[in-house]
Structure formats: C-alpha cells, structure tokens
Length: 278
Image: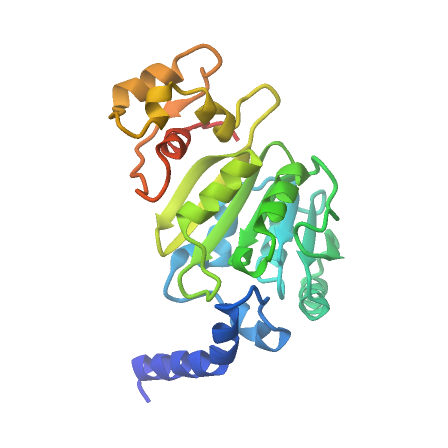
C-alpha cells in the first residue's frame, strides 16, 4: 500500500470513528471524550498552526514563566510548555475530565517534569488565581465550553498585566470558532489583539492584557469619534494614524486589517490598532 493511500485510509478511519462525537458536538458543547484522546494527541499533518511545537514557538517562553494550559486534554502542549519554562517555571494544566488529566500527568512524569500542576475544573468555574500567569493557551477547546463569556473573563483575570493569551482554532475541529467570534469574546473581556497567524480556517490569535493605565480595545473603541460608529462614513488610514497619535495612545500603531462585514464598525476601529508590547 502506497504512502498516499495509507494516509487516506487513516484519515477515513479517524473520521468514521469520531463521527458520533462530531454530530453530537454540533448540537451542544461536548468535550472530546477520553476514549478519543489518541486523536487529539496527534499533531494535525495538514495545518502548521495547530502543531504543538509551532504554537509554543509563538509564545516566546523564557525560564521562570508561569503558563496556563487551559483545556489541556491529554497533554499535547503541556510537556513542551513545561520544558519551555524550565525547572524554575510553572505550568498549570486545567481540564474538566479526570481521564484527560491522568493521561497528561502520565506524560509529564514519563518526561521527568516536576513543574506541572493539574487542576480539575472548567474555565469559568473561578478556580484560577488572579494575576498569576505570564502566558495562557486555549487550543481548539473554546467551542467545548458552555459559558464562553465567563471563560474569557476568568482568563483575563488570571493573566498578569501584559500577559498573553494564545487562542488556536482549526476547521477540522467540530467545535471550530471563527476569528470574528473569538475576537469579539476576547475584546469584550478586556483583551487587545496583538497578533494573528495563519488564515481564517486555521489560525493562532494572540491577545494581550493591557497594563494598568493602558486602555483595552473595547474602552478605546468607545472613545473614537462618533463618525466611526455611525456606519455611514469612511475611515481611512490617515484618520487611524491621527487617532493613534492623540494623548494617551502613544504606544499604539496602525496595522492592516481586513474587516469582517458582519462586525460593527466600532469593533473594526478597536481591531485596527494594537500595542506591540507584550
């Protein structure tokens, strides 16, 4: 059997095995069942943005950092995250399913890692301490969370000022969330978009929690001129640049942004500016 044929057979088998879960997941927010953990332990061969090594690389980890692996599952990212922060760092692996946590714990023990703490909870349960984490990752798990607004609120509170949240989505996930949906939830919680990597079907978005005294995206959008939110005027690049130079916005810079026409104009105004500081 040739390699291409073998790949097709494996993909077909995976699709058949996971079909019942995928169908149910479209109707309600169901976490990936423990018996399918082998499926989510694999790096997707068709998209780079969902690979563990690539995601970790985008985080710019350094020794001593504290990282939250939210919805860690069987620990696909937990191990490389723990290695990335070194023995002086700390990783909190959070998942709602005991079976997933057991698998993640076994993998960290096999790797000889002792800097990982395991927490059985769902995002939104308010089990996380405030202002503790330098980084947080939410990898193809957002759609499994019933109360996503509460989840983002807890993530925002748990990150230190200046901390970074990485949200990863890929179209192959039955819970796939669009960029517009993810950004709206993050901005509403107080985050500012910092970077977008990939494309609309497979991407990583970095969101930053502003330092004290820096306006979040939602608050900043509220201060833009009424013309930006009226929906009947054109806003060009020069207007954005002028706005970014006003007092209190010296750290903002213009970036190219192609708006989603389903998003209100004032949300585009917020998304069109970002802080390069992390």
